[in-house]
Length: 345
Image 1 (cartoon, rainbow, N blue to C red):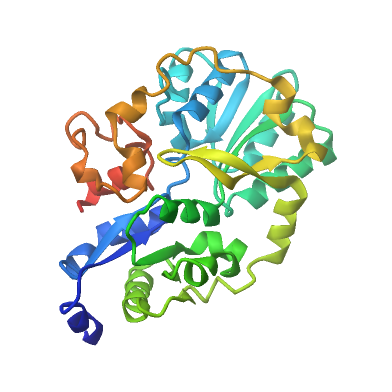
Image 2: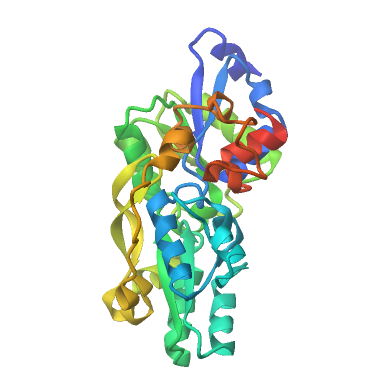
């Protein structure tokens, strides 16, 4: 409790978590109340579905409309684009399916060789190795009716962008799952260049509280700590990193609320371009007249920048609810709005 006493003499510390599971633990166990008036805990761009901008949703919807068998992870199906969603297209009779693994999509392609299967890959560095291995296996097995729309994002550069937007944060709870792959090294710039302390945290109550305490004690000594030592090392998983580097290369992508962020996405390399749906099929969005409608009616982009909390959105619990979401943060189980709705702030 000594660190908490020290905090009462200082201004409120702002700590951002960039992992949906951390967000859930913080709300579920009322950790904000434990640190009330001492530490402000805010959510950042940690939900892999929530960070996908509306134009990317519109693009995958276009593939469904054009007769492709679209397969992806469950949460993405319900995310609204500007005029439709994959869920709406499924209700209209289009082929849209949810799976738990990209390998399931490859199995679907093998079972229906006359139908072109497009897997929509979303997620961070944690998801990327399995998507890469699936592409490698498709080539190895000679599967001709399988391709991928790669919407994968990487975490370090979005954090750089976050601080360029002048968001006032004193510390970061860093995502343990991501760091099992990357290790802690890619995040050292947070301390070295930005002067911010970060803690790579595990996912149970004790992990998160311990990580917050470490942040409090180290807030004036910028550094990167590994709390989740049972799974994370400094160098990370070298095998997984090599698989990612074999199939993907960094690319500039847009994030919801952040616009274009340099080298923050993963694109399929030319060597594997046969399995890149965007290069192979070249489907384009036909209707763009309502491109900004989603940004004008929900605050998801601002929430992921740490500018608002879900309860400050005028639609929260009024017209935006889990059964009728206006934005992705209410759709995904890892989204801040869905978590606030279920557990409170």
